[in-house]
Length: 163
Image 1 (cartoon, helix red, strand yellow):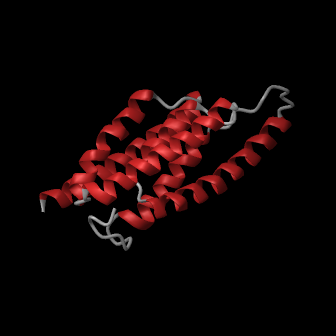
Image 2: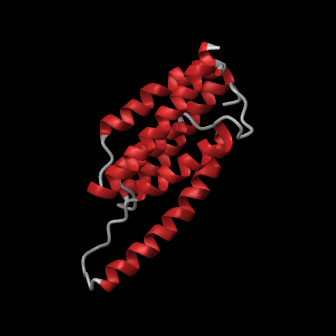
């Protein structure tokens, strides 16, 4: 019973962290390293509370996070993505099951595209000539919250331990 409470408590903490990430990225165009580190540190506790097995479940989470980091670090090197966004998505890959992580990426891309269009229109209306800075952490947070709400929280169809 305690691990179930811990499981959902950690998911709520992750949801709060995503809200903080979205707010700070919107306000300062920055996602703090301490926040990303807290999400990473919480992942092993979540694995334990969820009843995940070291092999293959935890190994799979680590593998997906490593792959996500490798791809996104490349995008960062090409100046196509911010460092905080790379770290936030990598940290989320430690929590979200691989199939659900793909769902997160789809929602993130859709929200990110819409956010870019809205900000682009606002940018043009203000007749600004500088490069647009899209707070993509907002899209990442919405994607993460979407997956948590539809697949992980009570009544969402996800069972404890199913990752």
